[in-house]
Length: 140
Image (cartoon, rainbow, N blue to C red; front, side, top):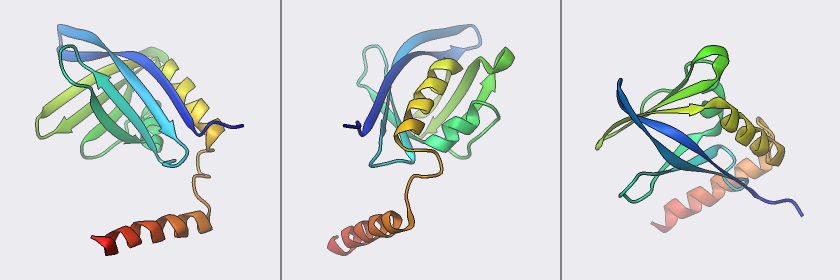
């Protein structure tokens, strides 16, 4: 039986200033039922967990080249693409995080084994998903 989720976790550095950063644990989750999204849950000391949803393709692209528009920007830093910088913007403030690339690459490889990149939805599945969304709009 094939699992329909991929989970992982890693430690990222939350950058407070050029001289100060601290480590936080981040949970990663991917579900075959939502094949375009990767969920990050940031565990900040003393605060409730903070969830963010990224496009899986954005994360993949950001490992090797600057990627993103709007609220999420991802790009590689460090020699030999060993680290990635993630900049997040929201009304409550901005955050900059650094993470090693290797665990993210391994996580994305596991998601690709579950749902291959570019094969997220066939035409019929896409039509069914759109119909579900539109039915939900009619109910409201």
